[in-house]
Length: 55
Image (tube, rainbow, N blue to C red):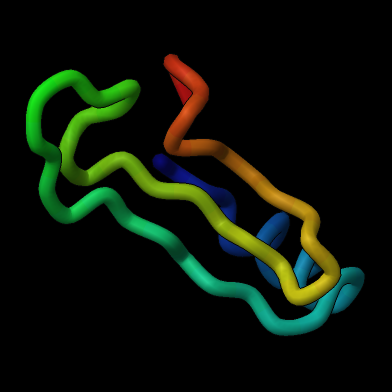
């Protein structure tokens, strides 16, 4: 997942706290590879997605 720092700062101002979720390990079939990540905001908004391909 790549991101634009300006866009990230604007999103933090809009949504508040953010967590970055990263796939650290997989076993068997997995929708995303190790290293895939997404941002999850305090209000439940998401950017990227470990269940989405091509994010």
